[in-house]
Length: 114
Image 1 (cartoon, helix red, strand yellow):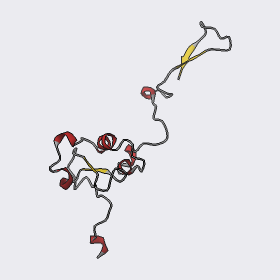
Image 2 (tube, one colour):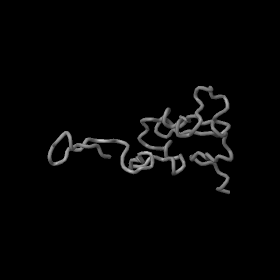
Image 3 (cartoon, rainbow, N blue to C red):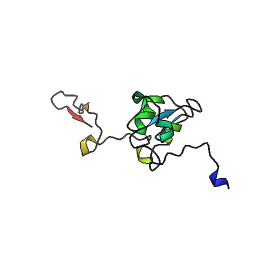
Image 4 (cartoon, rainbow, N blue to C red):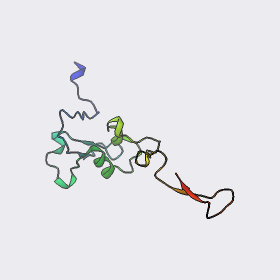
């Protein structure tokens, strides 16, 4: 039956993988590369090339990957979005402060805002 056929898609289930051990897989080239924690991929990989998280593995091995294949395999909450994630230690606003000069353009009346 077709459900037993291998696919080109990696199966990165945490139940099947080794926790905290991710390695880069370049079998289909850089643009189709991804990180895996499957035992078959991890075994035999030098320790220096094993990463504690899938994100770290992608970041180190596929930083310029335009296809986004590696990052797209991450859980949804770990995938980058187009929106900046600034919380300013829970206070709201950006973690960046800028000087504000009131209409008087006075140094004494100036303050910083985020």
